[in-house]
Image (tube, rainbow, N blue to C red; front, side, top):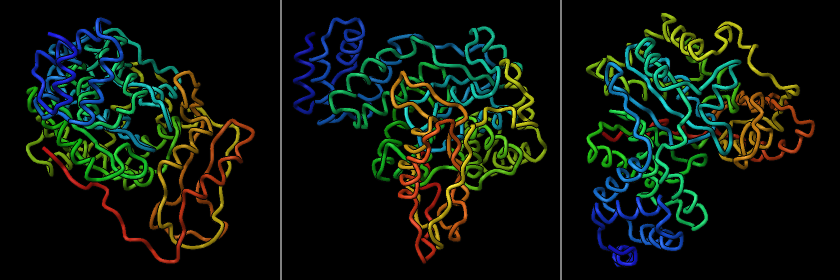
Length: 433
């Protein structure tokens, strides 16, 4: 078998066999296939695409290129959740304890963030003492005891994905749906999930700007799951404005606590209940979506969800006192309100621009070497459709940078105010099973 033949075959629009895909992945990870040939194949896939069987074969080969986590000693159906990313996306912080509180085991591996804010692990590390680095035996024990544990991704989880993503990033082949889908699903499969709920974002603050592209990505990942014997549900949700009101690591922990108390933002709460219902269904603790939704709401109302969060935090050495005293979370030295220049309705909020402003305040990483300020971020006071008076606060800036004024114009540019109330967008566009 020659790499040259595999490249020319895909260049001509033919389907690759499982053996050819496995030969490529194995050879590239072993450094037996040079970057220029791997780049050529990535571009051929970008231009010619892959069918669902090829995507599944690529996913499997990438997953098996490194560690395969064995969760078989955990009782129950292990359900994972993945979001394609957005601004103010606090869902994992809320969903993990919420779904665990009704009996679904959440054995989650999460990563750090590169972009607007930190990833799930960065956000959790804003809780004093919390440690995501625990041994596998303790990880399994905590899930069996508490139904929940969240750890950082291992260094050897789907190494082929890391290598190929770095290559795609410099060869203009990142935005290929077969490659994106295989990248996401390879990590989920390697992490040991039996069932997966996907939150595929679309809009100005999402990777998939157009709804049609988000639908194709969601369908592709569901089909990969089917080929690999996993139950997968995909929810396509809106990301034209930030989700919830908090953007920033410790600020998002505060907002997660509000949702778990029953006092959270309407859109964030609704999306968590939607995603959580599908997780409960796949986890076998409810027979209908309506039953699952009621169980989740009851857990919030009774305080069980919040207590599960406390147990989860304390079991991983975190300060559980933040549940009742959120002021123990990191706080910025500069907290400044940004007033509205005039009165009117918020007609749109450009999620990506607001996210970039949060990153400039210190909430995210521009490069892998950047250091996150866990206290930095933005708290929105108004969302699309709300009325604001001239001089009223649109949002509050949290930062430790003395020259924070540089983001004011960027934030005002991201928020459009008009005389007429806008037509509301749906939060959830579609569900694919």
